[in-house]
Length: 250
Image (cartoon, rainbow, N blue to C red; front, side, top):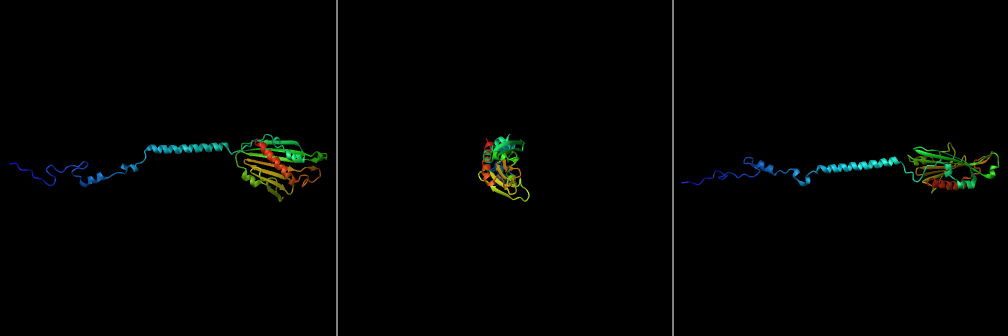
C-alpha cells in the first residue's frame, strides 16, 4: 500500500520557493540590499550632463572676450574730444573782433603750435594798435595772447582746477579770481593786482584755453592800471573766447 508523503519541516514537499533576487541562504541581508536605492537613481539628484558645463564655460569665455575687445577699443580711441579739432593756425581761428573794436586793429599776428600724441598746443600773439595812440613814438601796443591745448590722453580737469590763478602770477601778488558762468565747462576771469593784466581761463572737456590782454601805452607811461580797464574789457574777452570755441568746433 502506497502511503502519502509526509511533509518535512516547513518547506513543504518541494522545498522553500525561491524569490527573484534572493537565494536560499542569504536571508535578510539579500532583502536589505534589494531595498537600498542609490542617489543616482533619484531623478532630481542626477547631475547635469557634461554638455551643460561646456555650454556654460563657452558662454563665460565669449562674454569675457566681448568685454576685453570693448575695453581695448575704448582705450585705443582715447578720451572723447567732442567736436574740437586741432588748430593749424590759431591766429586765423582767434579773430578777436570784440577786442579789436574796443582796443585797436589787429596787427602782426604770430601763430605757433606743436602737435603731439598726448597733447596738441597752439598759441597766438596779436597786437591791437590804436591809430590815435600809434602816432606817439615809441609806442607799446596792446597785446593779446591766446593759447589752446587739446589733451588727447588724460583729463585736464584736476590740473586746471589747481592751476587757476597760479599759472602766470607768483609771490605775494594779490590775485582776484571770478567764476564766469555759461562759458565752457568751467571758466575763470583772473586779475593780478600787481600788473592789472586780465586773464580768461576756460576748461571745456579735453580742451583748455586762455586769453590774456596786456595793456599798451606810449613809452614811459606805467601800464599798471593803464588804458585797459579790466571791468570794461572782460565782456569783450568773453565774447571773443566764445567765438573762438565755436570756431574750433566747426
